Amino acid sequence: MTDAGAPFPDGFVWGAATAAYQIEGAAQEDGRGISIWDTFSRTPGKVINGDTGDVACDHYHRYPDDVALMRELNLGAYRFSIAWPRIQPTGRTAGSERGLAFYDRLVDTLLEAGIEPWATLYHWDLPQPLEDDGGWPARDTGDAFATYADLVSRRLGDRVKHWITLNEPWCSAFLGYHLGIHAPGKTDLREALQASHGLLRAHGLAVPAIRANCPDGQVGITLNLTPAYPVDPEREGDRAAAHRFDGYFNRWFLDPIAGRDYPADMVEHYGEDAPTVLPGDRDAIAAPLDFLGVNYYAPAFLAEGGGDGPLGFRQQDPPGERTAMDWLVWPDGLHDLLRRLGRDYGGTFGPFYVTENGAAYDDPAPEGDRVPDPDRIRYLAGHLDACQRAIAGGVDLRGYFAWSLLDNYEWAFGYTKRFGIVHTDYETQRRTPKDSARWYARVAAANRVLPPE
Image 1 (cartoon, helix red, strand yellow):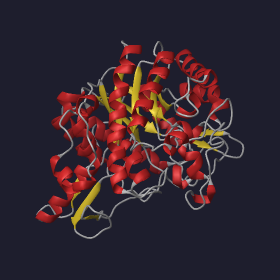
Image 2 (cartoon, one colour):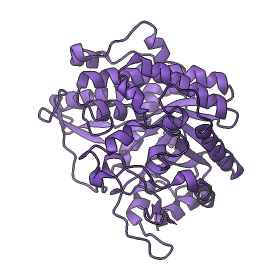
Image 3 (spheres, one colour):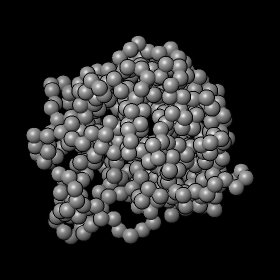
Image 4 (tube, one colour):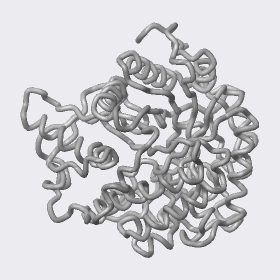
């Protein structure tokens, strides 16, 4: 680890992140419509224990206390998402005053606490009527998203100055439409690829709408990116597998946003399943951005052959520490990823922000006002050290958002996985900052990585 006394750059953003469906609850209040996750979570066998986000962390009612907790933890920024079904219950209606008013209250409370709001417009909760009409593979959904982006940024753009269009479109497209383990639960590669294009087009259409309503703001997108390593760097097949995984997971989204079209090798590989791209789509997708949000959790080590699906590779991680999600703990992957982004895309996207990074562990129940979680502290310290090393190597990284502020609804895992730096008792809704939260608060105040205690 680098010298714990070395500071991060002046103005480095220290934050934490959440998502609407994972924490808000109030699923049937104030005119909120039904999302694809409401439908998916009620489908037998899709979510562990049949858990839903109907109540989640009840943030919709408890946000003032949650914001006060953020202030106590020295957070300078809070990344949250806006629930599309709260704003447009069908995805096409006029903006709901009650839905918009909730985010007015949240944003104002954050600003009063000295916390900068970072708003994500889409974190996977598509209004169900839009899915019924074709979902993300349908071009109309992208047009509807642009209207939604205009509605929200027109209402909040005088106060929210950092906007993220989409969170992790890879997950929306491939987990939702190909692998079927996220909403809407479909299993069609061609649909997934068309959904990926629909999502990127929606992003591109939203950018100018946000800029028009918030000319002094900054606009970006958040991608979940995974560095790909060959299991045996000396074996040509493993190197090819790693390159193909990189095309599937990373370049498929990075390249078109950077104005480079979809990677030619992947278009050839997908053949007739590749998405239909119409005139004007390329330029729309490549709308200039002010920053790129980077979500990193684990690397991938690839070997030739085997595995399921059409890509002809298999993952074969080396031995090492793993989280409760069975993900390899590999801080060097974040360093390598940031260096690669700076080298290959730094002139295109401007600065980078780590908009999610964190780990689920089997934390103990609170002991009074304390939840010891030394594994999470070590995880965060190692990845912050990786950030610091990347900055020292010339990467323009300007902020870090821990995932997540609260233990919350973890999608298909329901309430069985805890990523939060703050413990949530789902029966009482009591919040208890874990040791990692207290440590992270000291890190944010000092603007430097402190040794794990």
